Length: 304
Image (tube, rainbow, N blue to C red; front, side, top):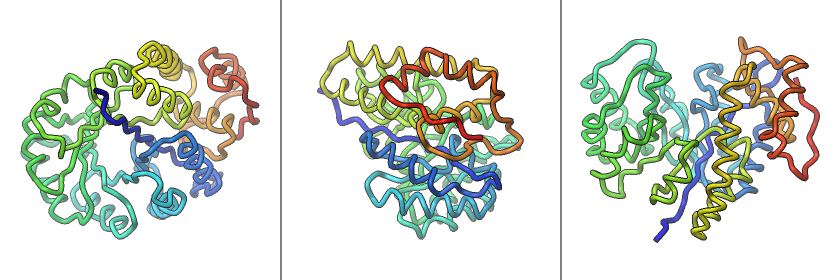
């Protein structure tokens, strides 16, 4: 029997020309997701580029996300930084707001041992008044949260789960070992059809901001056990991801153009990321997988 599916979108952070929070863009992005039955958000995660934001923009991002969501979806907040004190201060900045948990990526820039990471996470879990979620992204941080480390940390009553962006095989032992009280939320956008069909029910990714209608369709297909439709949408999603990963422009600049085409204003690519060239904008609109997103829709002009 298929379990209830939970899709959590890692939201982007739309910015003004001065790189302050673009309030209409943030509100439009959240409304777009909610209108497609997305039932969870991560703000200030990797997609939200928290580490590139000013402290004031970050604070406003979280505050306004609370206001725009209005309790209609689970709201998780990325707080992970390069050290204990920096992450502690981010937790203190947001924990009095109406959020459902804090998500802590493993510290980066300096390499840490697994013993260091255990102490780091346990100390943060002790002081946080909100549930804490681990975040494993070794492709970016250079530090892997090993299975034994995760199992040990899962014993802490305030560490409620993990967001795993590494390959699913690396987190499978945790899925097999722990009870349902410890949530394993995977970011495997190329394998969603396989994992959904296998009963892996919690998924989180940033690509959802571009195609919430596809994600809604995948949920409906899973709940109806319509595997043909699920696989068809997965092929489109994988094709789009492959294009984004190989396109000549910076990823977040391409995301900006696509979000603007959805009618969601703002710049999702802080400096020093460059904007798309005029030629790249033409190539983007001509890409078949991009055209599939906008079938039957009018495309808004691309904003700078």
